[in-house]
Amino acid sequence: IAKTDLAISKRKIVKLASNIPIELAERHYDAANLHILPGVIDTHVHLNEPGRTDWEGICSGTKSLAAGGVTTYFDMPLNSSPPTTSPTAFYEKKRLATEKSLINYRFWGGLVPDNLLQLEALSECGVVGFKAFMSGSGIAEFPAADDETLRIGMGKIAELKMILALHAESEKIIKPLSEKWASGSGGMTGYGYSKSRPIISEIRAVQKVIDLAKQTGCMLHIVHASSSSVVDIVHKAKSVGVNITVETCPHYLSLTFDEMTGLGGIAKCAPPLRNQHEVELLWESIKRNEIDMIGSDHSPAPLAMKLGNLNEAWGGISGAQTTLNILLEEGYWKRQLPLEMIVKLTSSNPAKRFNLYPAKGTIKVDSDADLTLIDLQKAFILQKKDLFYRHPHSPFIGKRFRGKVVSTFVEGRCVYDDM
Image (cartoon, rainbow, N blue to C red; front, side, top):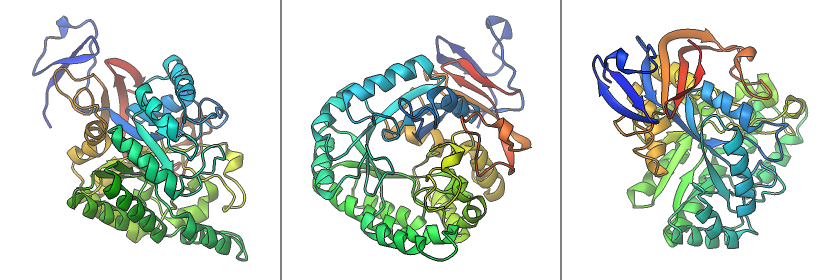
């Protein structure tokens, strides 16, 4: 951490020094008493365009991300219609993002049973990697990858020198348990939903895909780990040479299944929220540098899809706008997590893993001027009116946070300002 002035020209950082003369600048931004961070890279969002813009869209989604200090997002392939499993679908999504996105973007391609012959073409399009589900995705057009699809697909992805991201839950485990807990009297509770998709289902799926990675040489990225037990398995695989990373999400670091019981579908996600003990164990994993990055897994839906029976509600938390707020409040303030560690988890580690570094993920001369300005001392209570989501619901409404995003710059252009 250094106190310095910063100069930007032609979208790049061109100088870091004390007392850069203001008169040299066409525009001057006073960031006194603020911290300037490398822009957040959110590697896991669902903006749902084309095809499901009634759930979210690129305009509302990227406004929300910018307000949360995010300067680059990776959009997941499944909630678009058609899903991003072919070059045609990729280019349609790119056309819309070029027209509408306020911030930088990349796209994940999908790995599903019927698109194995499309993987090379998607790689040539420029996908950041591929995404597969080991359990049902909830989207009929994006079926889970069976064992044969995984084995063949991982071999092809390894040949392409690309990464496979995995939603790792065992359908064999969760299907009978979901039926059991849903059939109980009184309806599904947050505790019951968490038990219906237990941690062991994540563990078994991760162990299976690690074994396949050892056979194929495929690089892996395990998304939204809800438990330190999953992180431990990934950490051990790394120690024996498996090329694997793991992310968790802000909701697993701040919420429990008790909130799910109170809020219902607003706090439903997959894997589910766990108990407070698991929350604390994840923070310990972070402190040991065993978690590589944090993605929001922003998975929005209309409010009507989140109400009623918890078992039938859409499983996804709206969180694109609140990642930094949660990490600053729960990490920096409550658990004394260094600010540098938060930057690693949200910016530099994602940039390095996905080959964006040092253009992104750092503040250096010649790096892109993707910057997030925060007021560490500013406290606020999140209100519905603060959210830019198409459907402004969130399990974090009404919570108090310390540390506020006040401005976001994308390649030198201010896209969000709340000074």
